[in-house]
Image 1 (cartoon, rainbow over the protein chains, first blue to last red):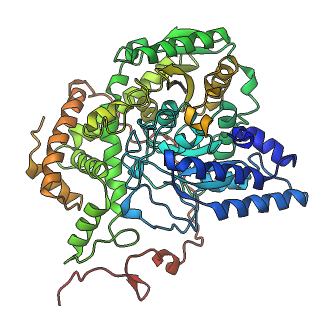
Image 2 (image 1 turned 180 degrees about the horizontal axis):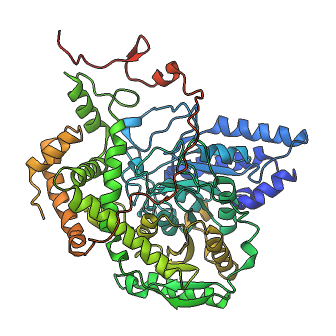
Image 3 (image 1 turned 45 degrees about the vertical axis):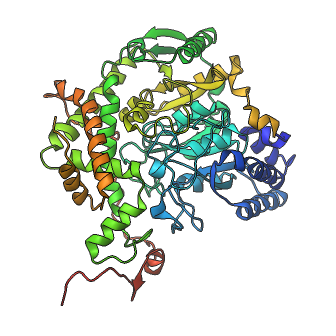
Length: 490
Length: 96
């Protein structure tokens, strides 16, 4: 890595504002690294060289003229290709949106750019964010920077791989059942999924509207805090965006872990965690204890039902949300169709990949007459029970710790033939998604050379506590400073 | 638990406006069966007195219903695969 691509987002923002570095030189260094590493990682679906350099120059000119710049001044950022940017293509990793140019910009992206961030490009993902390995992209397979034969996780796999490879210090992802936290863990970076409603979903192509949330991937918790303070906040364009006050997350980081209690749901973890992943998790608990946190055992009796609940609720919502892709208003239209029904059916069959079709079928089934109560309503009731488990647990602790995933990164192709095995990769991230509460994944060690993540889950709108704990953890550990051999050697 | 037949997948695919190939129908019938078998464990739980949770947000945050500028019509039509006379064009629906 050149020294510029080793800097954190916080450091870049500080030095660009102080005019010790120009946004343009930072941008060019990262674009050069994209060009160098893309052939081996394939993290991006599009790279905005001209647009990025132009916005960096504009920022530099503003600074030279004495205009103020935001906290992310000159900070390169990669955007998951499910968030719209006016004037550029959004594909959602799907053939059905090949070449689609949205007429608006997502609020999350607009907020980053208003704070000075420079968008490098759009990152690869599982089609419509449906998947846990990024293998469901219609365009390319992203490789894990730690081992090119393994998946980066998903669905925000391109964003996680880009940050892990030092191509971008910061990236946006989206998390419906773990799609930020799981790839963050598998690529050895920090992933923050804020509370449901914290970040506007305007300009985010919907997968499951009661669960979808925008968040960040970064190398440090400090950067996650900086980014969250920019991203979070009410938006008139999204009626579900929360009006709760957004604290300055960076300001409370230094308060540390002392006085905080961490709950560990050991019974839930008995469902199965790979041995070295579990060992790394136990070590991280000891590190948190050493940093001043107190450990207690908590119970999440219904968390074991979360995967079944999630794949009913999320697919039901997806089947409804994806009805909009009909070959009429935008996106792919099948040629040579006889009638309107054929236009819908053929456009959708050719345009969607297998996993998306599978989820539309499952979601339509659980909503169909005769099965609605038995599956969909029952799953909604389980969601209530899962949320109640957390409320009970948070009576005795401030955050709940688990491994982020039961295993480190799996091989490309290992789970593609067995959807249920792929779904089970999300077992530890899905419960918090259903409850709508925030989760943070922090690198906490290695299993046979592959990164392992520690997940901290908190009360609704209490990202500040998670970030404090995560930062305290990074102060006393070195895991986040390890870099993949690929990124070091190039 | 229902036995998931190819006909059942066919019925659901029609509801979802998805034309599937015969191979897809067979594959999805088998995989849907496996996924539903896994989900079957939720059937055993007593949820009679539990309220369903449809959303993580409990408070409504509706804005005032005031007119404001939206996306211009020609902009909205700009991405259409086929548009004419300020309208989306589709195959003829009514024969005449």
